[in-house]
Image 1 (tube, rainbow, N blue to C red):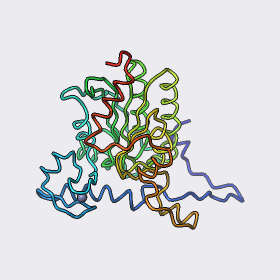
Image 2 (cartoon, rainbow, N blue to C red):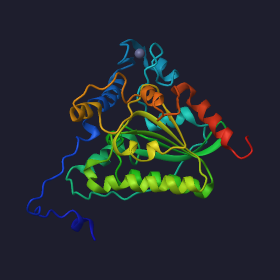
Image 3 (cartoon, protein in one colour):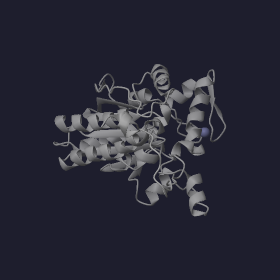
Image 4 (cartoon, rainbow, N blue to C red):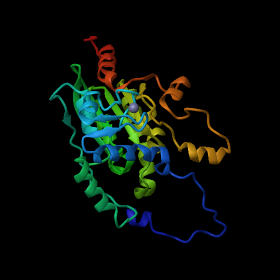
Length: 302
Ligand SMILES: [Zn+2]
């Protein structure tokens, strides 16, 4: 069946009541704060105001502190490329070749130009950047999602790139480390974006059954279909401090259940207390922590 046939609009049968779903996590004001913060950071000339403690810092000071506020520890959103740079042994990272053809199943007239302009702006092919690199001498397949690319939403290309990363790692007997940051499934690709949840979950399962080690690192914000699939399927789940992690946003949940949510709900610390996260790792300790885990799990403990 062609995509066009699949998405052909047909009149609803008599008596059909459309299902109602909570608003997608992309509408979540919390989620959008991250993007706004990042925009503020980009547009400031040489200094940046921390959105949490409101202190002003030179950009060079922030860069030296892994883009973490030296006063209050607020973790600024960083680009995928910078994330990789903070993490791997110098010069060891090689991107994985996995070109996915552009698909526009709902024939959204602005979708292709939006993707093209984001590719130019971010230098990324899609909302996830995958490659192979070494962390403290240990080789691993590394994937980093970028909230700067359509809020890190997962469509066909992200699903394929994540799956490809697991398949490559399985072939080469390497561990997988994924840094997630996502507003959820990509609305522009309709149901095909939801199918990526099953596809990526199956890829994790296959990899895991064959003895692969998968470390998931949840960063701000990880929501929607990514949380409901590969982000929460890690053998070890780490998170950056105070990251928003959830499925639907807090506003949507409050409206649905008609109750006020507890303080700190859906933040890394709350999730760790409730057993969903194994360890909260500040950005300046991430390389060391991952290096340590990889060393413990390597065959000869080297
Ligand atoms: Zn601060």
